[in-house]
Length: 322
Image 1 (cartoon, rainbow, N blue to C red):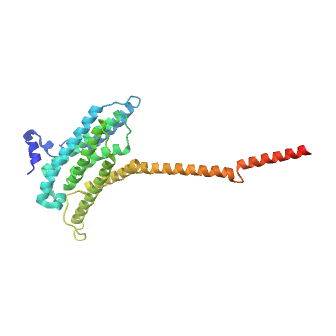
Image 2 (tube, one colour; image 1 turned 90 degrees about the vertical axis):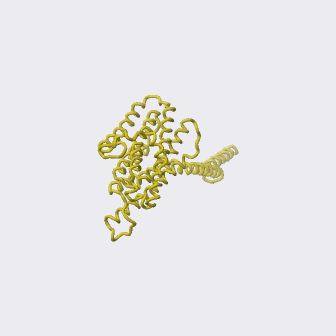
Image 3 (spheres, rainbow, N blue to C red; image 1 turned 180 degrees about the vertical axis):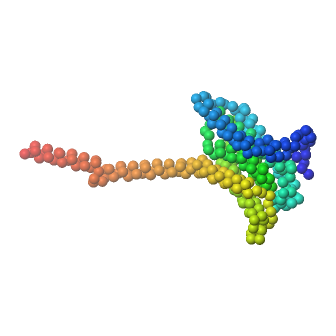
């Protein structure tokens, strides 16, 4: 029995909630059409880069309290939604098993769809992250802006595809966001946390798991619907080619960008510090060797000067004697 969901719903007058808000209905629910999604993405980019231009000659804003509140809301909201998804998936698993909880349409319940819809709406609220960065005049990376805008599109495509396995990326991403937004909340208050590197590692690992699940689901769908007598398979999987292609493409791009970020931020720093030390030592050693060579080598400048001086003395002495 979904104890947590029922407990929360007991405080909500569900009878007063319109149907298009209680479940996802394309064309009726908020942000449920391509023109709206495209306009929201364009608006996000316009606000971000417009604000950056406005702040160019202005002092950065502190915004510590609202920034911390924003991150606390997202961290708390993520853990609550993650718990609700986990509860619903566990109940489905007890009925249809592991494969069924990934593939069969019965496991894509009304409540799971509602949670996916709420997770999708979270992505638009997360746009505020970038607005804070621009107001505080922090650097804007391509990874940050691309990740925020593409994730909203990804969640929209997956919601329309109604693939049962979409709970996996939502669940994992919410888990990462619980820690990530808590990290920003705590560090904005002055805390010194040591696990940022491991947070990035978790982000990379989630993309690997999501890609593995996506490939599994896509293969089952492909084998069952297109090559049932040729390819071995377990059964059908609820998916659409569009959702599979778009989802796999975006997640793969995230994986590559985060690997690049990890290498640039952590691996290169360690390597560069070693290289700097080695290079400095090598240069110093080469300097000492050159210094010794300049004294002892017959072709050195110092020795040539000494020879010239000696020759001059000898010539002068000979002239005086004559």
